Length: 297
Image (cartoon, rainbow, N blue to C red; front, side, top):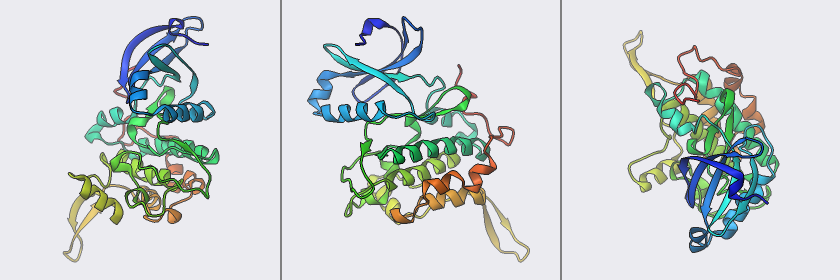
């Protein structure tokens, strides 16, 4: 059984819903890890004991290079601790804000998206829905390797089962959760991938609005507002606008952000989408910077 004395505690690197996230070094192996410390009193007050138990149970059984590994857990009189893999370059939200114009180039975003899609496709094969895809829950480690984390809203389910819990982050909610008449299933993650791809490339979620009500309306409409690159006049004198994103990027995003869950691009097909394959190796010389360029070691 682990105990807190087995670790040399480092700085706090984040704050979670139930406590702090601290960098640490395991004394015997010298391995650098992250301790997610959750206050028992807060967990009990919010009556989320089963929620925490499900998070630990699900993440403990996952093994994928693009999913943050849970090495173990323990508790003391005041806290529950999760021992997690350390992704030293931070989360995609922080790295996104450090990019030129606060968005990634396509050559940089495509390899990141390929890894996240791979992680979600694996989860779905394991009958797990993540239900909270967003840049804050995606970390980056060595060699720009993506690590999907935070399984607090994850659930183990089967394709013929419907879920009804209102969960996730507002800008990433799919239409079937906003207008919950038939429940939701694995399609919520597919929608989330579309929102994520758009945000990485455009710098903000596609349906974000000043009010919750307007955000809900935009999500239900599911009309994707691709940004113009420039305005120009064609040979016949007509004004037209060129879109900033390539046809390939728009194709993938549009295929993922279909209003009807059954019409969204299957993840096996998303993994071999031409836009992802075009930038399979990444090419930071095409106007983008590597996700860790400003993150430090």
